[in-house]
Amino acid sequence: MKEITKITGEIGSEYPISAIFAGVHGNEICGVNAFKELIPELKITNGVVYFVLGNPKAILQKKRFTEMNLNRVFKSVNQYTDDEKKSYEFRRGKKLKRLLKEVEVLLDIHSSMTKESVPFIICEKNADEIVKFLPAGTIVNGFDIVEPGGTDFYMNSIGKIGICIECGNHNEPNAKLVATETIKTFLSLRGHLTSGVKLKTSAQKKIQMYNLYFTQTEKFVLNKKFDDFETVKRGQIIGTDGLNQVCAPEDSIILFAQNKQKVGSEAFLLGRIIS
Ligand SMILES: [Zn+2]
Image (tube, rainbow, N blue to C red; front, top):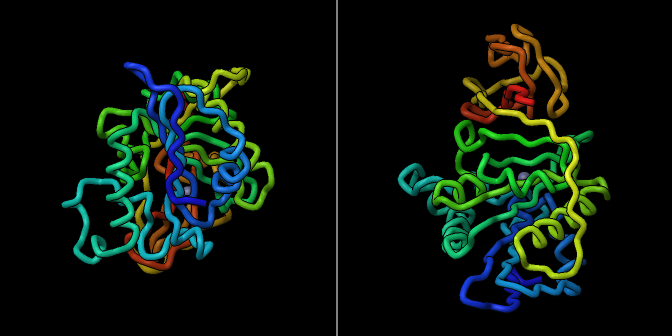
């Protein structure tokens, strides 16, 4: 598959331009598999759609990334060290930024290493009118502040719309089905398709993230295994960072909790249930 597949439909004086990314993390292949199946049969009738393999090198190596996390390279250039700037992912990010400047709305497809992970969406409020139709039961806002640097962050930072969907566990066949349904619904909402995709909404939980914990020592160990969106009580011990216990500052939900072996690693996120 090509790194970038551009499909052009009819182009009038005004037309929609969208991008769909898959494999920004190279081991999250549900979106890549959905592309392989969908692209040959797609009839884009209107506007321009870019289907993009986010991190081709990592996809080939079946790894999350090769030198640095591609989904953190989208902050302004002066926030990176010289070594980071030399990395494959940083250079790849520069190319992707150029493409995204042409685009109005981005859908970025991911999946999770957490076994029981259910589909959820990361976006900000500017995406409300799109995400309410997507097949995910939870909408998470606030990443732009607590964990900036992703593709969705970049789009929002330049006044456009960025949507990231987590389609469930990498190895579950359902992840590809979620990715496929999401892509079709997204293309329909964006006005790229004329053939009928039935739009439906269902109940969605809303969560506002408020904290990302960075490790302070080389040994952060979780007190237990946490599922994504598991609730934690105020004062509950989440883990031990060196000799210090790390507790939840308020009743929260926890996301992406992992043991870490490096200072300054992202160990977990905390959020509040809004509705
Ligand atoms: Zn990912």
